[in-house]
Amino acid sequence: MKRSFDLTSSSTNTVTLPSKRQASLAGFLKPKNDSTIRSPRKVKSDHVSGIGKEDKPIILEDDDEDEVSKQEQEEEELKSISIIDKGKAKAIDTKSTDDDLVEPWPPSGIDHPYHKPPTKDYNHPIVIPPINDELKPIHFNLNPKVIYNPITDLDLVYYKNFIDKNLSSKKIMDFLLDNLPWYRVKYKVRGIDINTPRFTTVFGKDSTQTPWSGYQKCKPRAIPEILERLMRKVEQVTNSQFNFCLVNYYSTGEDSISYHSDSESFLGLNPTIASLTLGYSRDFLLRHVNYKNHPKTGKSVNTEKFNLEDGDMILMKGKTQHEWQHSIPKRSKAKGRINITFRKGIVKYATENYYNYNVGKGNLHKWNREKQLMEEVDSSDGGVKT
Ligand SMILES: O=C(O)CCC(=O)C(=O)O
Ligand SMILES: [Fe+2]
Image 1 (cartoon, rainbow, N blue to C red):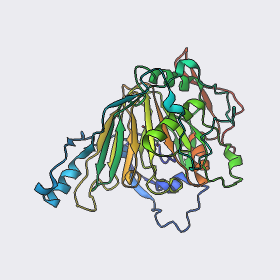
Image 2 (cartoon, protein in one colour):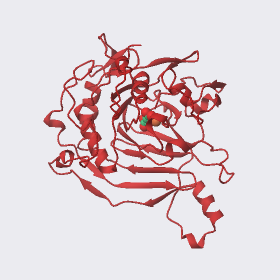
Image 3 (cartoon, rainbow, N blue to C red):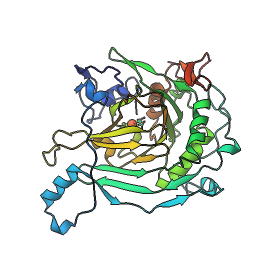
Image 4 (cartoon, protein in one colour):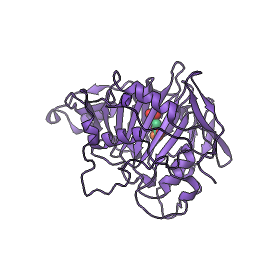
């Protein structure tokens, strides 16, 4: 996201916050003519920190539509998520080849300037090495489950063990931990100090090729080879295109991301976002924006929960970002987890927003493998300058 609100407080006091979009775009996105911008909303901070109703999703097989009245069907769909296509279990790259990673993609004719090896050290504040032979090939598994609800507009594809957890995920996680620059971003929104409760970093820039002096402030960073390879694979599998890669590291169960939607205008209508998990599993909650009273039915909508495990990928698409919010709530026993998201910014504001809220103005951290913790390091950081 945007880094809308990361309230670390666990109190249940009601606080008034600016809307997600107002917060996320503060300072650089002109809101004029945007009738979708909402006024400040009241939220309960226990919701923001993800503590709340966490119903188990009920997985239903398809109903015979003729047998069920429309009303019953709608009620059923509200109570559950429906897997309408289980996909076919299919393993790929399980042999000793990574041919899939280098086959031409995207198909010719699609303009995608970031499908090139990144220029060496391109604006990285530290040297990110190319991947060594140990990391190659990356082993993937394909077993997609389509999760689609036409009433609530939940629209997901869930790939269990997409990055093979026995063969590849640990090596990739170690490489990313060891070699990426990490940030603990702080920012202020309308007088409220926000301490992002996780480590973040971001690569990429929008593909509009619009010259914009704003880029001077944030120095977009080339997508490192390992992430570029993953991104290409995800694009190929999902038939999507991306130009940004945001990475989160949740060091303990205290690290989290509060309920939010990645529905920023700079991602366009109905953005497709791919989200990958490496390391310790975490609950991923999805809550409808009108969960108390769905406008189509007047009924409540259950929260959905997925336990995202090492190697899993979840694709959020369609109206999901507009109709649903998602979160990774705090979990007392959790250990280190990396989350990688691939997104496509369609206008220049994306670049500024992502760097502001995921790199910020400094406080570069590096992983200390011996001590198994993040350490703040001294560096002439190439992050956001203003
Ligand atoms: O860690 C995750 O799975 C979710 C991250 C997320 O929602 C985000 O970065 O916008
Ligand atoms: Fe998100």
